Length: 148
Image 1 (cartoon, rainbow, N blue to C red):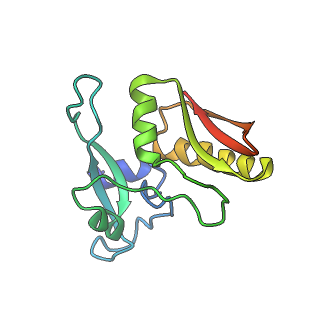
Image 2 (cartoon, one colour; image 1 turned 90 degrees about the vertical axis):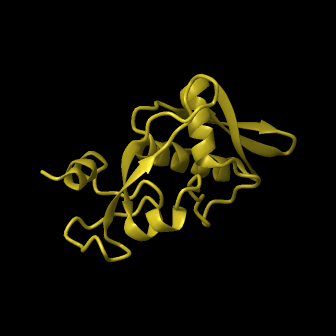
Protein backbone atom coordinates (compact mmCIF):
# COMPACT_ATOMS: atom_id res chain seq x y z
CA UNK A 1 0.00 0.00 0.00
CA UNK A 2 1.38 3.42 -0.96
CA UNK A 3 1.67 6.35 1.43
CA UNK A 4 -1.09 8.11 -0.54
CA UNK A 5 -3.40 5.12 -0.05
CA UNK A 6 -2.59 4.97 3.68
CA UNK A 7 -3.30 8.67 4.19
CA UNK A 8 -6.43 8.48 2.00
CA UNK A 9 -7.83 5.51 3.92
CA UNK A 10 -7.14 7.17 7.27
CA UNK A 11 -8.82 10.43 6.16
CA UNK A 12 -11.79 8.63 4.59
CA UNK A 13 -10.87 9.94 1.11
CA UNK A 14 -11.99 13.50 1.99
CA UNK A 15 -9.93 16.62 1.38
CA UNK A 16 -8.98 18.13 4.73
CA UNK A 17 -9.08 21.65 3.27
CA UNK A 18 -12.37 21.79 1.32
CA UNK A 19 -14.05 18.75 2.95
CA UNK A 20 -15.14 17.35 -0.44
CA UNK A 21 -14.66 13.70 -1.47
CA UNK A 22 -11.39 12.75 -3.18
CA UNK A 23 -11.55 10.06 -5.87
CA UNK A 24 -8.69 7.61 -5.21
CA UNK A 25 -8.88 6.46 -8.85
CA UNK A 26 -8.37 9.94 -10.31
CA UNK A 27 -4.94 10.85 -11.65
CA UNK A 28 -2.67 12.62 -9.18
CA UNK A 29 -2.04 15.14 -11.99
CA UNK A 30 -5.73 16.13 -12.15
CA UNK A 31 -6.67 19.20 -10.03
CA UNK A 32 -9.34 17.09 -8.24
CA UNK A 33 -6.93 14.15 -7.88
CA UNK A 34 -5.45 13.02 -4.55
CA UNK A 35 -2.30 14.43 -2.96
CA UNK A 36 -0.64 14.28 0.43
CA UNK A 37 -0.25 17.59 2.26
CA UNK A 38 2.32 17.89 5.02
CA UNK A 39 0.49 20.09 7.52
CA UNK A 40 2.69 21.89 10.04
CA UNK A 41 0.99 22.73 13.32
CA UNK A 42 2.06 24.93 16.22
CA UNK A 43 4.05 23.12 18.90
CA UNK A 44 2.89 23.22 22.50
CA UNK A 45 6.01 25.05 23.62
CA UNK A 46 7.40 28.40 22.47
CA UNK A 47 5.25 28.58 19.32
CA UNK A 48 7.72 26.58 17.23
CA UNK A 49 6.39 24.52 14.37
CA UNK A 50 5.78 20.90 15.26
CA UNK A 51 6.46 17.93 13.02
CA UNK A 52 4.34 17.86 9.86
CA UNK A 53 1.21 15.73 9.86
CA UNK A 54 0.25 14.18 6.53
CA UNK A 55 -3.32 14.83 5.43
CA UNK A 56 -5.23 14.06 2.24
CA UNK A 57 -6.02 16.99 -0.07
CA UNK A 58 -7.10 17.55 -3.64
CA UNK A 59 -4.10 18.48 -5.73
CA UNK A 60 -5.66 21.90 -6.51
CA UNK A 61 -6.47 22.61 -2.83
CA UNK A 62 -2.94 21.66 -1.83
CA UNK A 63 -1.37 23.74 -4.60
CA UNK A 64 -3.60 26.75 -3.89
CA UNK A 65 -2.67 26.63 -0.21
CA UNK A 66 1.05 26.41 -0.99
CA UNK A 67 3.32 27.00 1.98
CA UNK A 68 0.93 29.36 3.77
CA UNK A 69 -1.50 28.54 6.52
CA UNK A 70 -4.64 26.97 5.04
CA UNK A 71 -8.04 28.57 5.25
CA UNK A 72 -10.97 26.26 5.89
CA UNK A 73 -13.97 28.28 4.73
CA UNK A 74 -17.29 28.64 6.50
CA UNK A 75 -20.11 27.67 4.11
CA UNK A 76 -22.00 30.51 2.44
CA UNK A 77 -25.38 29.09 3.51
CA UNK A 78 -24.64 29.69 7.22
CA UNK A 79 -25.63 33.10 8.57
CA UNK A 80 -22.58 33.94 10.69
CA UNK A 81 -20.99 37.29 11.51
CA UNK A 82 -17.30 37.69 12.33
CA UNK A 83 -16.49 33.97 11.97
CA UNK A 84 -13.22 32.90 13.56
CA UNK A 85 -10.54 31.27 11.42
CA UNK A 86 -11.23 27.56 11.85
CA UNK A 87 -7.68 26.19 11.57
CA UNK A 88 -6.23 28.67 14.08
CA UNK A 89 -9.12 28.02 16.48
CA UNK A 90 -8.59 24.26 16.28
CA UNK A 91 -4.84 24.66 16.88
CA UNK A 92 -5.46 26.81 19.99
CA UNK A 93 -8.01 24.34 21.36
CA UNK A 94 -5.54 21.49 20.81
CA UNK A 95 -2.77 23.33 22.64
CA UNK A 96 -4.75 24.87 25.50
CA UNK A 97 -8.21 23.36 25.55
CA UNK A 98 -10.87 25.58 27.03
CA UNK A 99 -13.40 27.75 25.27
CA UNK A 100 -13.36 29.76 22.03
CA UNK A 101 -15.99 32.18 20.74
CA UNK A 102 -16.19 31.42 17.02
CA UNK A 103 -19.10 33.36 15.50
CA UNK A 104 -22.10 35.59 16.10
CA UNK A 105 -25.51 34.81 14.61
CA UNK A 106 -28.75 36.82 14.42
CA UNK A 107 -31.01 33.96 15.55
CA UNK A 108 -30.69 30.93 17.77
CA UNK A 109 -31.57 28.68 14.81
CA UNK A 110 -28.70 30.21 12.80
CA UNK A 111 -26.38 29.68 15.76
CA UNK A 112 -27.44 26.05 16.15
CA UNK A 113 -26.93 25.39 12.41
CA UNK A 114 -23.45 26.92 12.58
CA UNK A 115 -22.59 25.01 15.76
CA UNK A 116 -23.73 21.68 14.33
CA UNK A 117 -21.83 22.23 11.08
CA UNK A 118 -18.66 23.27 12.91
CA UNK A 119 -18.58 20.28 15.27
CA UNK A 120 -19.13 17.96 12.29
CA UNK A 121 -16.42 19.72 10.23
CA UNK A 122 -13.87 19.61 13.04
CA UNK A 123 -14.53 15.89 13.53
CA UNK A 124 -13.03 15.39 10.06
CA UNK A 125 -10.50 18.20 10.18
CA UNK A 126 -8.95 17.05 13.47
CA UNK A 127 -10.44 13.66 14.43
CA UNK A 128 -8.47 13.38 17.68
CA UNK A 129 -9.90 16.64 19.09
CA UNK A 130 -13.19 16.20 20.93
CA UNK A 131 -15.18 19.43 20.81
CA UNK A 132 -18.73 20.43 21.57
CA UNK A 133 -20.51 23.65 20.72
CA UNK A 134 -22.93 25.82 22.64
CA UNK A 135 -25.12 28.68 21.44
CA UNK A 136 -25.43 31.46 24.00
CA UNK A 137 -27.66 34.55 23.88
CA UNK A 138 -26.09 37.93 24.43
CA UNK A 139 -26.58 41.50 23.30
CA UNK A 140 -29.51 40.76 20.97
CA UNK A 141 -27.60 38.07 19.12
CA UNK A 142 -26.41 34.49 19.63
CA UNK A 143 -22.77 33.52 20.10
CA UNK A 144 -21.39 30.15 18.97
CA UNK A 145 -18.85 28.81 21.47
CA UNK A 146 -16.55 25.80 20.99
CA UNK A 147 -15.36 23.86 24.02
CA UNK A 148 -12.56 21.28 24.10
